[in-house]
Length: 291
Image (cartoon, rainbow, N blue to C red; front, side):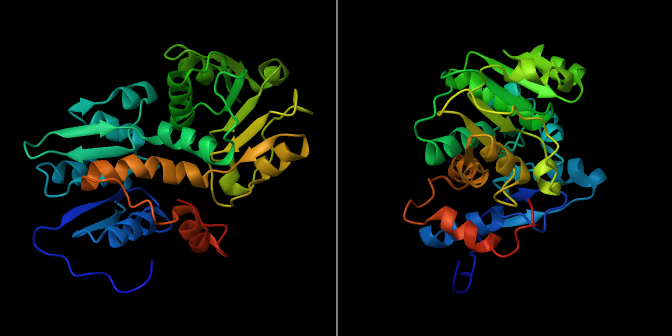
């Protein structure tokens, strides 16, 4: 985004993103660029409460002076429990990445992460289909649960959650249509898999210890990492080395932001702005930063 920020009026729409840490989040840059391109009387700002201050911050926003906030790590599950109304995507994911504040004091929770995941495949792998074959989701946290929920809604019929501790994978399988596997059964989980999605934070730390098959079952096999910094994680490099086509996490960030922007500011983001190019410029050369 170039140029100076326009002055806000007393009627400006205020929204933001809440997380800890928050200083490296790309969300303010993305939403700020959309606001500027659309000429809105609005602002999108980062909030970084202490671990114990999240609930007080959110409850202080009740009443609609702030239109809403995106929520990132580590507060997504706690955000869900503060809401008075929860959409189906957030309920299935067990987490919210968007809270909307209404004038009557009510808080509405939504989850747009699943839309972001599907957006990433649509942009980078347009031939991919969720029902083309088994899908393996690595991890058993909120991101994995959200991925399973989104994939199931999109039509996937064979979803396998693979986690170091099988009991945590089984906790997801008890709630959503998927099968649970521990790392010792990775070979069984990967049998015939057409898609592998890393829903762990391992990529943030350069960890390439996640299990992968020795080869893909065919030409149309895809691997995605939800992490977008670095853009090419060790997991993606390893997956490409055994024959997977790869999908990075940057378009997931953009894909979840599109419906968030519409909910926060009452209009879709301007399509003329190249959001991916904007964020790639922001990431380079600081490839080690993360949301």
